[in-house]
Image (cartoon, rainbow, N blue to C red; front, side):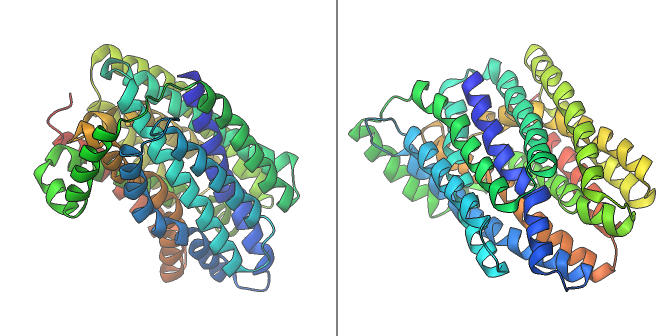
Length: 400
């Protein structure tokens, strides 16, 4: 569990730090002469390309890991390959001088993230008992919180050179992953098992829509996850621009780091406590509901009470909601799977909710800002998505 959490720390650090600091700053340098709304749109497009690819990559990578025959196991090769691809994509993104180049190399990095995380999530379903999945969710949530603050502090306060920031993040990603890959148990699939799973996965993959309709609990859990992650992405992806252009904060980057510190501290505290409490109570849905509603309230504060002090309050409230949600997120995702033999594929579809909103969120947010000329509707739509995501989990009957 410790090694698993450290891998996620590296993944979240390498995913979130670029989205919050490195990519916006790099876009700002390349599009220095553009109006601020055009700069926001440019950032949204660069980030959005990878999100579109993630829709295809996640289920395919998960299905392939289900039927991989290798003496190294069926998940390990995909985790290792995805992390290496992610690291290479990060390093290449750091040396780009055009928006097109950035979009291509960042998309490469996102594909690597999707491949690694699709196989990594399947490890939970493979090896962790249901009674301990709240704890493992807490581990991932803690990794999210610590990885976010480490990454943002590293590239926002310590390493200010663009190329070096990407490179250091890439190296740390590999360092965080290596111990888990060396020590993890990952029994190889026999050739007979692989043929059986392959035939079932291919058959199901051709009619995934029918499968979703046939398994309402899985579908509602997927909808809930997509809405919460999308709402969170809309509410956080453009904060650097919100602080600089809407709140007129002179040093928006430093203020962003301060809000992230508050957000992460509360997230970590709530997630660790919530995961253990969820396992003891045997309940999951209440945590998702509270998480969605609390984050929705935070987004509403940013929309209707725009001020630096209120942004700090919203950061704490957002952290509370995000921590509550993440404390059971992995548990919920792995407890509603329709088919245990094809868990990698179904978790791959479930994981679309992770990478796609994070990368498409900036593009959707930029479009909303451009169409409305401000940030109010961005946060209103974020709040609506978050509350809807919290309510959607109530339709999952197999969970308490």
